[in-house]
Every structure is written in structure tokens, then in C-alpha cells.
Image (tube, rainbow, N blue to C red; front, side, top):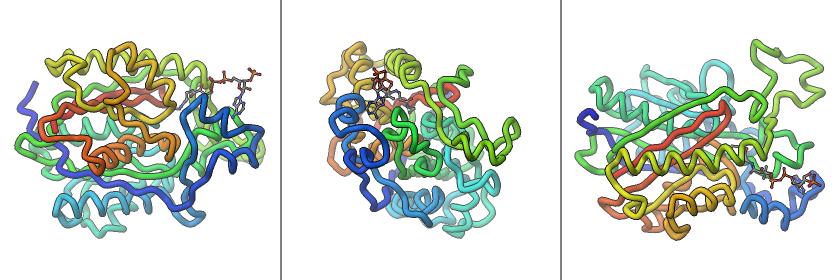
Length: 327
Ligand code: UT7
């Protein structure tokens, strides 16, 4: 492994104001608070306003992270923005953030690995710093999933939500160090996709009528895959980091379903008292879920200097990844 100087200097998060409860969802589809909570752990989620876009939420989270890093927007020399719900195909959402924060003509790149986006972006951001190519990378996960949710499908619409989180990645001299990361992907179209809107199926009256611009998922398939991947990744991260599961102070998993997380953690031998869960309040915000949860863990004093923190995620692709952090 190379010198590994890169680390997380600060985190920021933003969630929109509007709270949508399970009872609110039951007015849209045939469901109930009890079903949603038992099957997913979700009680409520946040939806962005009509004129609030993915880049707006990304920008708000980035401002908080920059302020905590005591940096100006112009101190950043690379933006990596993970999203499955970009403002546009292009300009990409990172460009919207760049101009919104007046960051100058720096590199602005969107990463499209759905819910695994933040862990992919963090690995790349750390690599850019570790190879001395760039100094200060802004790594963002931001989503307006409510704009690509099928509100006629009760099996999926109860899951998704909006929000953003950001991290400033730089040389941190042993603080927040990204010890090791691994990303992977295995093609599976049917498990999770947005079918229309690309070159394979351009927008047409038919695609709009059939709701094909929204997320389609095979819940059970993804569920089984996710339990297995979360388990494997936690074991691999510990082994590569030279630690045991008992040494992990806190796991911050992608908030897809509390039952997925509990099953995997049981297999690995990590008690739920060492796992950050906030899906009850925010639902599944895809690439934003880990940085939002990370921000909450720091605010709650759940992370101390020197702690090992494990981030892990899976998503459409299928894609997955983890980062082991030494705080
Ligand atoms: O972040 C990456 C994307 N996330 C995912 O892909 C999530 C992974 N999957 C899951 O979290 C779970 O599979 C779901 C929460 C999506 C579904 O839970 P499940 O326990 O796998 O339920 P199921 O799909 O097997 O459905 C069980 C029953 C079905 O009824 P029958 O056929 O048994 O009569 C569904 O029709 O529950 C019914 N059902 C619902 N009932 C009330 C499905 N959705 C709902 C609903 N409310 N919202």
C-alpha cells in the first residue's frame, strides 16, 4: 500500500425541510406505517422542494464541510460528486456546484454508481491526494431520488428520499486517514435500474406513460446480495486493515434497510451498538446516506480520535465498496 496520507478533514450534511411520514406514504400507495417500519426500519424521510435540486443540496452540504475545514471554496482543486439523480446529463452536477460556490475552473466530475457512489468517490478522492495530483478534494454524495421514484410502486417508493453529504479530503497527517478501500461491480440490469432516458431508451411518450424514467428494483434479489456483500466487505476491510471486527468502533453502512444491516452485522460479529442507523428518519438517500450518517455520528460524539470507522455500501450496477477510516 502507498503512503496513505489522504484523509477526511471534515464532513457536512444537508437534508431538506419537508418531512414525509409513512402515514403520508399510505395516502399515495396501499401501505402502512407498520409494514414499512417492520420491513425497512423507516419511519419518515425528507423530500426536496419542487425548485430544490440535487446540486442545491450538494452545495449546502459542501458549504458546511468547507466551513468546518476552515477552507474557502477556492482552496478546493477537484470536485467528485456521486449521484444517481443528477441535475442534468450535462453540465454535470459537480459543475453546478462549482459555479454555485464560485470555485474557479477546477475539475468537476460526477460518479454514477448509485448507492455505492460515496464510497467510490472517497476512494478516488483519496487516491488523487495520495498520488500528489491534487491537494484538496471535495467528495460529495447528493440525491433527489424523489425525482426518479415510481410513486405507483409500493414495493420501492416507500424507500427513497433526498439529501446530501460532503467531505473535504486532503493530507491530514494521520487524522481521518483512509486506511484502505475496495470497490467492485457485477452487471445485473434486472435487479435495479432506471430504464429510460439514456441512449438505450430515449425519452418518448411511451416511456413517460410507463414510468420508465424511475427506479425499478427487485427487492428480494438486492436484499440477499446486500447481506452477503456487507458481510464479505466488513471481513475483507478488517483483514486488509490488520484489525479484527472487535476493533471497529463504528460501522456507517449505506442506509438501505435496517434488516439488511442487522443480518450482515450479526454474521460479522459486530453488535448494533457499534452501527450507525438513521434510516428511521431519512429513508434511503442513496449516495448521500453515508456522509449524512457520518455527520450525525460526529455530532453525537460517537467517533473519537484513533477510532476505526468502516463505511460500506451497495447499489445499482450492481456496485459496492467500502472505506476503512482511522479517525
Ligand atoms: O439501496 C439500494 C436499493 N435498495 C434496495 O434494493 C432495497 C433492498 N430490498 C429491500 O429492502 C426489501 O426487499 C423491500 C423493503 C424492498 C421489500 O421487502 P420484502 O420483505 O423483501 O418484501 P417483498 O418484496 O418480499 O414483499 C412481501 C409482501 C408482498 O405481498 P405478498 O405477495 O406476500 O402478498 C408485497 O406485495 O409485501 C407486499 N408489499 C407491501 N405491502 C405493504 C410490498 N411493498 C409493500 C408496501 N406495503 N409498501
